[in-house]
Amino acid sequence: MNTRVKFILTVASAFAAGGLLAFYLAGRPVKPAADAGDESPEASPVQLKHDANGETTIVFDTGTQERIGLKTENPVAMQWQPEVKGFGSVIDPATLAAAVADLESARTVAEASDREYDRMMTLAGQNNASVRALEAARATATHDQLGFESTRAKFALDWGNWLADQTNLATLVQQLSGGDATLVRVDLPAGQLLPSPPASARIVAMTDETTSVNGGLFSATAGMNPATQSQSFFYLTKGQPLMAGAAVTGFLKMSGVPLTGVVVPSGAVLRYEGRGWIYVQTGMNDFTRTEISLDHPAGNGWFVSRSLTITNRLVVRGAQTVLSAELSGGNFNSGSRD
Image (cartoon, rainbow, N blue to C red):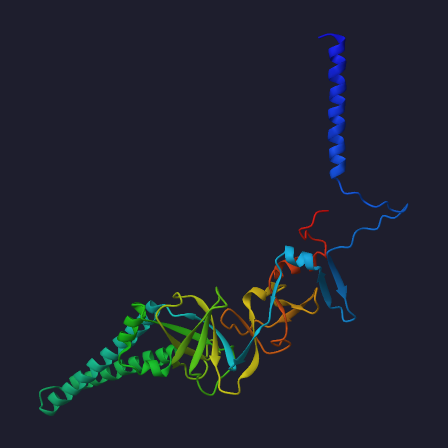
């Protein structure tokens, strides 16, 4: 290649590179010249405000709210019947079956001994049985009757007098084993005693606190269990909504004037430091974290009787992102580029 050709190619390459540079520069936005020493940062899309009481409000501009998909809703009004809270578990049918078998076995033995004693009394009246045989039959009947009463007393202590008095316990065990019904035991806190057993209860599995099933009173222990110092109630539910052995929380319905409040959707509730929290919209772009009680599950949320009304706007989507922004002091990736 001669010198003239090389010169022409070099000039052409320079023109091409210059054109590309001009095209790149033309596409970049032109920033206004800043005064010397002016290095103030752009306003943050997320800010924190603190009032005199130490309460923190987090501020999101409208664009940031849209980027993180923030959504708010008003809670729904609700009437709430007073309840007493207890804890327990779903009865394994095999456990009840074993207790019923012991009770029925003791009952059968006592009844057989009693019939034998009656028979020996008849024979003795006819001079066909010795006094010794009659005394032996009476001793056996007394022993077996005491054994049955002891077994029944233990059964009543564990399962309640009403259940101990039933004569069709085998049918109940069959229903539980077949999945036609579920029996749940609820124990009140130690030392708490109700004058009468509540007729119904909401049963909530500890693995799913937002879902409850209703149960009707089936039996109740008499007074407190000396070993546990607790009063126990048994509630029967239809079908098998809960697994045998599952730990549950029972909310026993009490008589009285219903409470007025709202239902907070489960999507609005956060768990932080062992407590329940929600974000309430306190301005167009302002959101304040508020603690709520999680003692009253209600459908797909929780019933709250204080501090909230149907006029409040609650963050029902994006609450976890708001919490992350608050805990990081407002320094989080809001979706905008640096």
